[in-house]
Amino acid sequence: MKPEHFDYLVIGSGLAGLSFALQAQSHGRVGILTKAELAESNTSYAQGGIAAAVGESDSWQLHEEDTLVAGAGLCDREAVRFLVTQAPDAIEWLIHIGAQFDQMVGPEYFNQLALGREGGHSRSRIVHHADKTGWEIERAVTSAVRATDRITFFENAFVTELLMTDGRCVGASAVVGDLGTRTFSAKAVMLATGGCGRVYQHTTNPRIATGDGIALAHQVGAKIHQMEFMQFHPTTLSHPQMRNFLISEAVRGAGGILRNHLGTRFMYNYDSRLELAPRDIVARAIDAEMKRLDTWCVYLDVTHLSPEKISEEFPTITEQLAKVGILPHKDWIPVVPAQHYSCGGIITDLNGKTNVPGLYAAGEVACTGVHGANRLASNSLLEALVFAASAAEAVRSETTPSLDLPEPSQSHCISETDAVRIRRSLQIIMTDNVGIVRTDKALEEAGRRISELRAEYDSLPSSAFSAYSLETSNLLTTAHYVVSGARARRENVGLHYNLDLV
Ligand SMILES: Cc1cc2nc3c(=O)[nH]c(=O)nc-3n(C[C@H](O)[C@H](O)[C@H](O)COP(=O)(O)OP(=O)(O)OC[C@H]3O[C@@H](n4cnc5c(N)ncnc54)[C@H](O)[C@@H]3O)c2cc1C
Image 1 (cartoon, protein in one colour):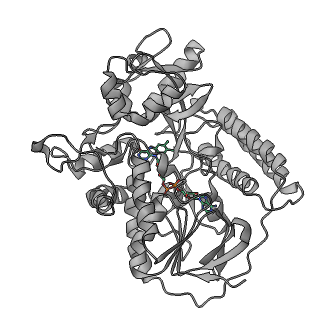
Image 2 (cartoon, rainbow, N blue to C red; image 1 turned 135 degrees about the horizontal axis):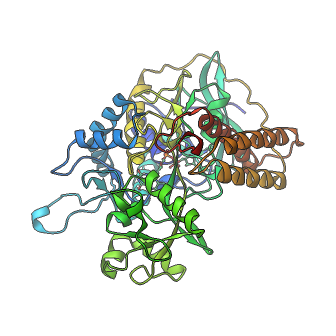
Image 3 (tube, rainbow, N blue to C red; image 1 turned 180 degrees about the vertical axis):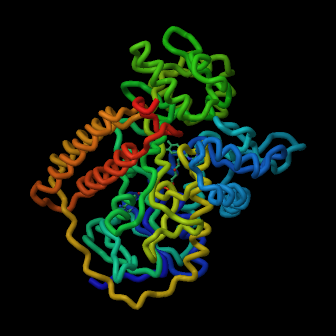
């Protein structure tokens, strides 16, 4: 079967991939490969919003300062400056393509965005759509993609390999639905595969977040950096019938109070910023409090807020909690921390370029340097937008490679029964040894066990193609980067906290 040619090939249909596609289509034909349905992505689940200094008392300088403080000295200053100065235009672009954000109510506020406040931000600057901002953004970008014939998208297209000729990325191969393996060539390939939360037992990330982009990049020699900086969201629902549902930071921004089971507002013992301290500090405080009291959760209390305010500002959260019988105006919400966001990834420059010619990356899979050792809340959707836009401009200079596409190699899949067992073991190892609080011994143990699981995976007999199996292999590769990054990091900074370094 002949390869299909596009000017630009995009892998992934979250905000990074689709906003890149929408901007690159003005100067070339774009093909999108995405492994599930078009809208299935981390992006769709984002609740809080997008940070941008668009409020009257705000400035990009303040946004920059807050981002640098959260990043704990490890941000790339140039990348942060680029991010925060581009933010207002990025919001304008989203509004231009049809995204609707909450506005201030009243004639004196005509056309003024309502801005939320989240931990680590010195101003209210979170542009949002109630508590389902990601859903609204994904709705807007998928509608725009469907409306243009310059973009072709393939759903259920699982990318198995980046194709290289003479050291240049010239395309990708994918298993497309029932059609089998297909190859695609392009002047430039944009890798926008999102995060890797499924490497842990408990994560807010949906099932697509299996670190495929990290493994694909690893295979072609792209540089991967700072994977040890794994962000754990402090407050996800802890309920036997619904685990890991995110209770947005905005709930604490609106006045939510964290209590232990005795009713004590324990954040007084950990940080003067209380519930609005940066996420890593709140997550570590909850972890410490649960260990100190030997309990399985703490509680988020919003019972002092009016039922109307809660249901108006947090309709999705209210609806989901009702399903398990929790009424937030009456009941404390049981919460625990869970993996949420990967700050590290494939190293890119301001134009989304990786060290591999022809290969670009954007969104959660990339490491642009804006997050440093810790991501400031609501900077990730922004990062996806800003760097996808600059990449869409940069790819204009790529020329059609006069290179033949190589034959794709055969991916090694194992039986799903074995893959389930290996994936579960990996998730337990990562959760027990490479979580919020780490030790040298635990990290060494994790490294050893992951190598054993990799050897076992590679030695098992080949089975028919299974996306689940390849994802498991990709999770093993990703876990290797997280653990080796954590072992190499010899200081406690940002999200990396090792008791042996205290
Ligand atoms: C519950 C939740 C709440 C969040 N809230 C916020 C928030 O309020 N503000 C904020 O800034 N950030 C938030 N985040 C983080 C933010 O949503 C993500 O970082 C961001 O959406 C990532 O966008 P992306 O385009 O890089 O990846 P994604 O949106 O995850 O898209 C990745 C795409 O790649 C595809 N893909 C993956 N592997 C392959 C493969 N092998 N072949 C083909 N396709 C593949 C997937 O199917 C998917 O379409 C939240 C995340 C979660 C999970």
